[in-house]
Image 1: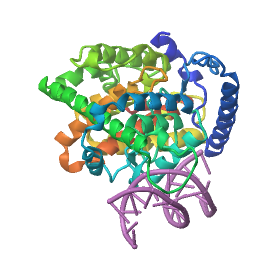
Image 2: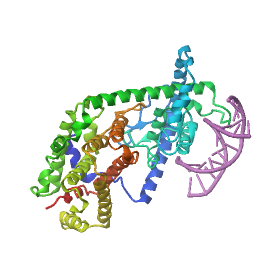
Image 3: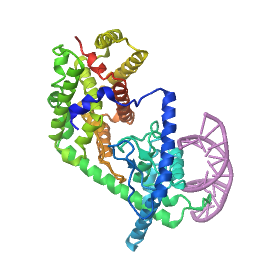
Image 4: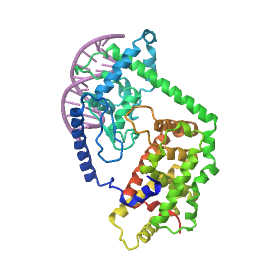
Length: 434
DNA sequence: CTAGCCTTGAGG
DNA sequence: CCTCAAGGCTAG
């Protein structure tokens, strides 16, 4: 599907953002479907290892967590492998001391950790979630792209990605007791899995750090922070400042198209491009490009006006009214405008650097490859790069600034979804002076 | 279903 | 005894 085609779908997007009541109804409906689906797959599962998935929504590949039996088989195989003498001879201190460092935060959602649960420092919530998932052999489906952000406030939005993160960070399924016996000590073989997974994660972190060092060596951050580099991306927005373009649905579409084209071209030329796994066709087919458009407009406005008062609420309202012409503004439009202005003011307070803008853009458009495999994907890799940048550039503001940027990502996705769903995608464009 | 608090029991 | 990490219970 071409970009122009996906742009043409702007006005016909299915409604994904609704009132609380409707959301609750949708959630309930989704869960009913999911239960039905789980029963169906259990009944279907006979001699085949691979599940053939029902094409519920036609074209989108489904993201399901592997079932617990399969994960348990993988763990036992792993245990057989690591029960070789060379690993048994290792000193037993490493696991305890390594985990001590990270004991205060949940390794899944960053909430306050209450101890080591199933081999990982986690909060009570993630502990309970992991236990319920394993005990009830739940299979979860991701409605997004399998790279949902899991933090304290968002952890309940996607069970698939939460469980995926639990496993990826090293939680051990075998630690959930089959006999449900309370108390007592963890069996030796499970302790061995804890130790092995912890060491594996250490290795991954080490590799990531090596990649960072390589990036720092090539002055990547410096190159991002140069105004001229970012300036290229603003090319198609600049005429908007001087009212050289009359805003219509058509002109908005073509500006978006050109800005996206420029972004992809620019992005592909970056030195680290080959190390990041981005599927641009997915980026086009899905609506990720619209998130980027909203972000770049905000950033462009911030660069040009620097203060939020460049436009008043009433002026924007007037423009919205003019744009819709004969149509009257619904209460929905007012609500969207309120939300939009609130969001805009938080954006103007952040004072993003060019590097932050670039990394946020990449995070916004990023899609992991759509497989069921639980693996360390490049979304987390970019998050780590951002984190490293934050620690180096704004050491005194951490971790607040980093967390703020992550929540900002979620906000931008939410506001973009609202704009598209309610056919208000022109709203950000109306902020330009005329 | 979630998550905070409670109970349990082996090992130090 | 105490500590830790399992499972259980239950308001929301």
